[in-house]
Length: 106
Image (cartoon, rainbow, N blue to C red; front, side, top):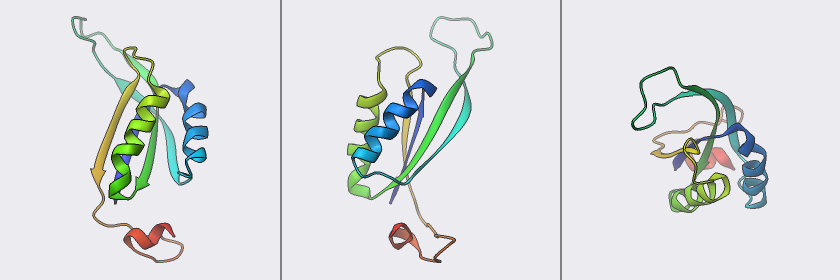
């Protein structure tokens, strides 16, 4: 299993949510976050900005495809579009059912 995390512009969340649901990727979480970044050549002034973080849990063979789908959906080719991270999940427990790992999602 993989964890795909995307930090995106807040105004892109609804669009991404619709695309994910259309692709049957219906299990994801989101939260509002603050992002800090200093663009190349800028002075280090306080550049905190509002972003949204989306976390999706996918099978290993879906991670690249899902990452590319997110990038294509929310990308404007403007600075501040966000980042996508893909991480390995070593262990998952569904608290409600007690199922583990890939069975936790069924």
